[in-house]
Image (cartoon, rainbow, N blue to C red):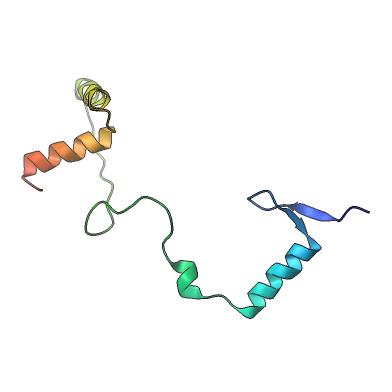
Length: 92
């Protein structure tokens, strides 16, 4: 007889009564909160702290030049903008 399932987890594992019991046991035993809240994955920090996102308006000609430069240098447009700002502001 096939086991009853209740869908699948995000990773595709069937949710069965056994899985629910196992997960409930882990929950009742408690979790290490600091370990669970530890930063995992995502983008690596770019500088001394979290980066901010700034928005600027670009006229079509400037946008085209930016895209062309990024394509030519095999970089993202964001990388080209950061490099240009660092040079302009004399920031290392």
